[in-house]
Amino acid sequence: MIKLNHLDYYRLPWNFTDNSISWLEPTAKCNLACDGCYRKNENSHKSLQAIKSDLDVFTSLRKCDGVSIAGGDPLTHPNVVDIVADVKSRGLKPILNTNGLALTKELLAELKKAGVYGFTFHIDSKQGRPGWKDKNEVELNELRYHYARMLADAKNISCSFNSTVYEDTMQYIPEMAKWAADHIDIVQVMVFILYRAVNNSTVDFYLGPQKIDMGDLVYNEEFTERTDIKAEEIVEILRGQDPDFDPCAYLNGSEKPDSFKWLLTGRLGTKGKIYGYMGPKSMEIIQAGHHMLFDRYLAYSEPNMTRKGKSMLFLSGFDKKLRKTFKKFFSNPVNLFKRLHYQSVMIIQPVDFLEDGRQNMCDGCPDITVWNGKLVWSCRMEEQLKYGYNIKSYPKGFNGN
Ligand code: SF4
Image (cartoon, rainbow, N blue to C red; front, top):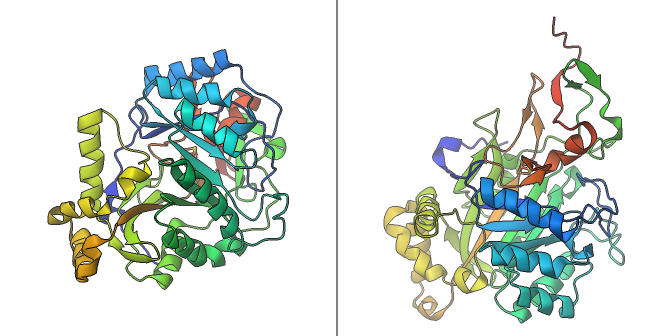
């Protein structure tokens, strides 16, 4: 496996109180049952008042640019349009994280009117999706296209795709990344989330002095898949397709500074052709500049912005990688008249268990949510619900005495 040096990349400045995103959970109910889901599928819609209170907690404790309205599936909530309107009225970008199943053209029109900024569609082959059950990740590109087209037709709504990556689906990553490049005009973000589950084989779990059986937590699956796929392995796979593929920015692990938890690549291209990549300096200018102008770090950009890739090339003076992109793009004079699009490829490596038992979280977690008025990790919400705390882990057989 290749080894990337985190010091070569820009550390995204996102932190606990000043971040790009926050994570709102209006419901735990979902109309699918994906493998690898971190939430128990329950019929538990929050009231509008409770959702307002969660948003009040965010706005009083944390700056952010966008709010991921997640769950569960937020489209199952009967008041999803009001929730979007509430987020928008607070000057934040409402992003719906959904499997898309309940999205109709009519609902999309209502959500747009309420101010929806973007969608992140979670689509992968382990969702048991009606009509798509035996399809692989590449065959699912047809469904991805359906949603991307729907948003493009509704005009200027950001379109992202999430896909959980398992040992047996890693092989499809190059084709998925190529599909995203082929549709760079209507797909703004492609996210690969590496599958994780509770590790009972090397660690024991404790709440204070009490040993905890994690057996009934939803993410305590009997897994047969690898749960240790690293972000660098995905970069290596993507370099097999394009040797120039290179990230520009990252979030490190809370316990292991040289681990990549969010690894961001910015690429520029026309439909079907990638001309090059952003370097750390241009991402730094964008994040710092956005914060200076708008007092928050940038999360999502609307399609009207991402199609202005040519103007991003002005940052070439500060950025070696972007200079290379500039030269390649303008080496063909016909390109002067073409649109250059920006697209993000994000690799997310959730909780890892280290050899000494510590859980390596995303330092500067963007997916922080609210529970009982407190800010907590959304990926470990089930621990809060069952025990009221996050559970600590130690190497198996650890004796504190
Ligand atoms: S710490 Fe958990 S909730 Fe936060 S970004 Fe990482 S995986 Fe997501």
